[in-house]
Length: 270
Image (cartoon, rainbow, N blue to C red):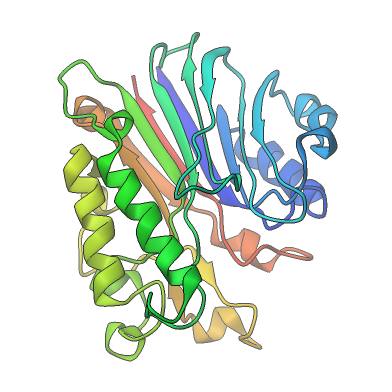
């Protein structure tokens, strides 16, 4: 049976709940992982998501900032909200599916810090936070998925475009946070340490361009197409043979009051 899982940095779930409903009606994902929900748990629009068919919802919210959520048509268990880098900001949530074709699969939803503007941890605390966050991800046993019986999926806005063709111009962006050589190397090391498979690049190898984010600053983002692949889908090696495809829903970037990220839908045949 196929499992579809969508990941989307929604940039305020309450502000864009109509866009969420439009997306869900059109694409009907089994699981929807949101980042940058920007609301406390008590303010999360649970009723709206339930009307969309998601009876099972796990949230990790924060007032005005960050925030992640997993909405599922299938029951789940063992929700976990892990803090990173000594902070209590809401950047991770995971669950284990307890029903459906992916029963027993752990779903991780991450929102890695953006890192500010200056790629120097000595003068930019936000960049130091980002690097420390990656260090802790690499060291966390919960993200070591190489065991033959491990079924795990990691999605989210990882705020790094690791490969040359994950950005519109690797040469021009090499000094820009999200595509600096240090960040690129560290994210790839995190994936390798856990033995994760980068599903999007496994199915669509370099040098094909892949973008999931386009800046609000561009007056005509579609024509310029100066994008970056900041949103990712990783799977454990056990699930590698189940990978069937993915779609970047670029049209959503042009909807009314859009997020600067497009949703990504991954399909696995389980």
